[in-house]
Image 1 (tube, rainbow, N blue to C red):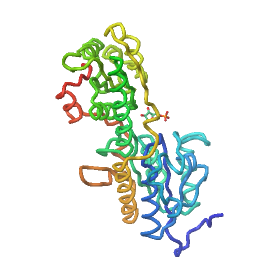
Image 2: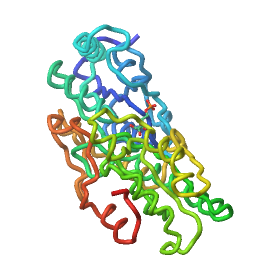
Image 3: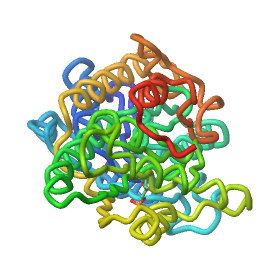
Image 4: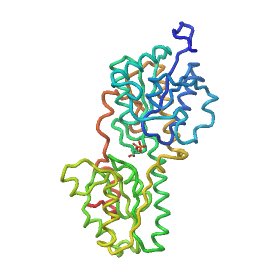
Length: 355
Ligand code: F6P
């Protein structure tokens, strides 16, 4: 049973949790946070299980350097994660209050939350409404969190998609087929754009650029300019046609992939096959790039905790790791700007973007 009140000799207690959809490099981040707290500052670290639900329910485990030894190359999160905040209690306000009770009972001085937009929004409530000392780290394979240039998980997911495209080139070439590859990214096309460029796709369809079916057909049929008799089309799960976008209807995930796999065979007079990577993009060992980014963010968060800078998300801004007020994050997903080098480069080398 944990002693409920902190004597002045007791070391600081830091809470950690991972929430929302998982991604690669959560474990390197947890490793850096735990080592920074325990080794550099001799603080105690308490890891809550399964995101905010574990915090509310008081489900945690002590994390020591021994618990995080060697986890930098392991996908997923040793704490588990979960979506949503009000799980076992009723309203969001009740969930906030329950989190505060557990935080106070455990004698925490800081809570560090790793997550996407939803996690950032609830973290802000814990800070503003319940007065908890909160620091967050941004994470998602989608790379669409406002307030930071990049999130860990994105590089690994892009690598997985690019490897898949490499494999699709050989089988598409053998059969002279059109290969559709659906990638994750429900609100933003960072993954679709990056993997299309890395994998040499002929077409990339992003949520940011509603596509015209006839333009996709033309691009797919344009063997001559491509110099080969097959094509690769990368489709973000949140991509939409101009027609559907014009209705203002909510985005239906996978609608683009479904439309193309049904309509392209006749319109392009070609054999068409669809591969949807789905959660494969979320799994497995993180790349070194993501491990480095996650470790740097974790180390920076411990520095901010030492300086008692709270109510912030540790962000990447150029070459710097800066605290951004939680009031400035957690809003609309960060779309790929149409003048971003990913998009301008795709256009410059003749990749069709469907418009
Ligand atoms: O937010 C990351 C993400 O992987 C999205 O790309 C995807 O649409 C969503 O999570 C899937 O959510 P879940 O894991 O809850 O099915």
